[in-house]
Amino acid sequence: MANRKYDWVTAERFFLDSGYTSKVSLKTISENYNIPYQTVRRYAAVHKWHTKRYRAWIKEKHGMEFEEHLQNLYREVMNRG
Image (cartoon, rainbow, N blue to C red):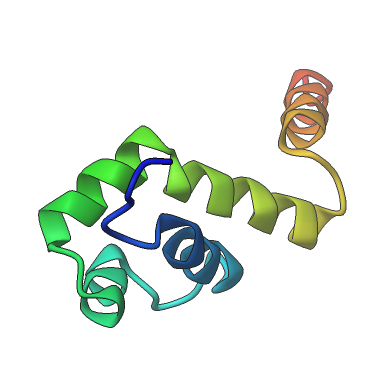
């Protein structure tokens, strides 16, 4: 099994569980888990942490999946004419 230098699972969970409007930033993750900031930034970008957190917020706020929310917004805009 590969030796993992950083606990990415825990760091990602902390970032995602903090909520979309949270003040938890990638810099906070870097400081809390002793991971270089640029390493966190690159890893988060590749694994789409911000997108995941935003989608979770949409589901929490609107009670539906992101795609369903977009469809509803599209219908609303198209029916304004």
